[in-house]
Image 1 (cartoon, rainbow, N blue to C red):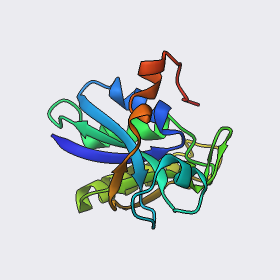
Image 2: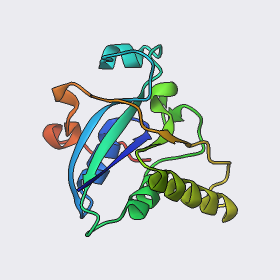
Image 3: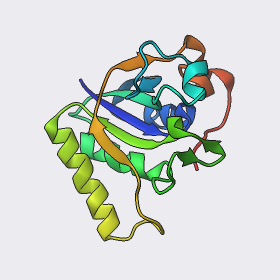
Image 4: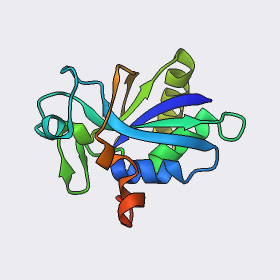
Amino acid sequence: MEIAYFAAGCFWGVEDTFMKTEGVSATEVGYMNGSEPDPNYRTVCGGNTGHAEAVKVIFNSEVINYKSLVILFFEIHNPTTMNQQGPDIGSQYRSGIFTISNEQFSTSNNIMNQLEAENRFTAPIVTIIEPAKEFYRAETYHQQYLKKNGGGTCKL
């Protein structure tokens, strides 16, 4: 099993999409790449911790590869809006890929550059790609929120 981390706005819809992807064995939502230790939903939403709402994706690379997950990531949100996804505004909703290896970093950059070269979006991509820092698991009620509460998706 391998791990990938993605931030694409509200983590509920992002988790729901990855959770339904063949080859993904587990997901967790949480907070990443901020400056404060032990963040929680209230402090992250306050916008002062620097964390992004993120999804940890545990996947079987024999069924789905990292490149396919990155492509899916770019398909399920708008990577051209700075610190915003739909009505959710703030740096915690930024578009980001948090990599755990040089290979993930290179793959992510290559895909983003290819999408830019193809003019896939009507505006420049603002997704950040940076090394993953500590992942803080979000509160239990946020885990698989849409599945537990019968909601739709946050997908744009």
